Length: 533
Image (tube, rainbow, N blue to C red):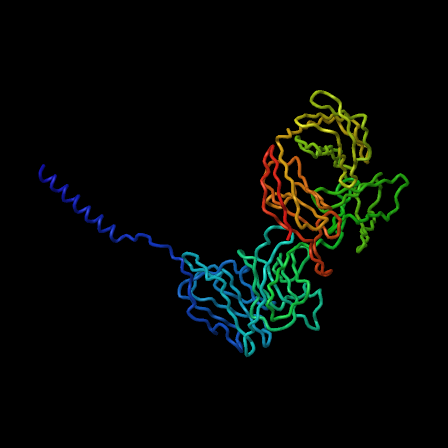
């Protein structure tokens, strides 16, 4: 027994010694490595002049990786044929660049790697590394600096290209659609400021582009653009502010197609409001047509009756700056059936109209087949307005708070273009208590009129809007409790809407100012002062 106990104590002692030894030898983790990789040498050296080769090697003191090169690497001046850069996706202590493009003589080139170079283990970036060389005998050293803002939003997009086009005998405004710029940089993913460096003295057009396809050319359909109002002279001490905006698309019509019986879709780009669709083919005497708009897509529907036994129909689509004829192949298809839909929700505002729409063009409303009652079964009078392009009836009536309403629409209340009629439709809706809402009163200081004041969601969706023409308090009543962003628009042309800019017309977007967010609470009102500088 004594021997067993002695052996147990001896084993415990030996185990303790081994544990202590193991603890002494186990790494404690230590601080995380946050040191970025270091460049040992470059061949040729950075800022080399009289560059003649087509290969560049950059050596590091540890293994590195390159990530997001397509977004991060900006070469100025841009190269038509991008260089080959390795390694991509694998670790190496060397970056190898092979230049494929023909280099311009007496020009300074800059490779801006952004944050694409990181160490292999911890991902620590080598921030904003620039490799610069010149094919001439000196390095251009001038620069242009500034910041990017969004014309309408609080924050601009990331990865915005900022560029300079040289203004010489070959310069035209259309160059932004056809040619790459002389110099270029990028705001990358974390800053809204820019610095275009290694520029030679000269006269330039300064612009910015949120480039949708990475070709360094402006495409109205996919890109945001910003530009300085006048040409700039380099060297300059001015810090420039560029305002990004989306242009309104120039009008264009796409080839129409038959979607259903006597229903033809005419797609378009731009503003449809001055768009005309005229049938050129012979039509019978009883021919009728209607045009409605697709609520989701940039499409107008051309509806017609009666059905015609033809192989095709010819149309002319026109616009102030557009005119073209189209042929639509006609085949036997089933017509759409009439469906009536209530656009408004179950909760309705005191000043909100009840909206009802149809999927086929409505041509007749019979008010005698409609009854509207409140919660006490008291009849409520109503009026209606019809919007032909949206094919929607708006029913207006006086409402009181904390009330409920029932509308019944009997069969044949609506008749469409094809003489289809609705079935019975029952609609229920409620109003809230006044204590469920909040309000705000704005006092404006140094404002220029007319002015649009908007309360928006954090994503910029307009929830409430007031149009102001004179110096007086501005009230927003019956507001749903929420946190709203405040946005004001200087309505320069007085058309009661925001107007964007246009590069070719040298027109900047209307001025937009953002104020701090405001919280609206139920059964509560607050005063707010908006001071315009």
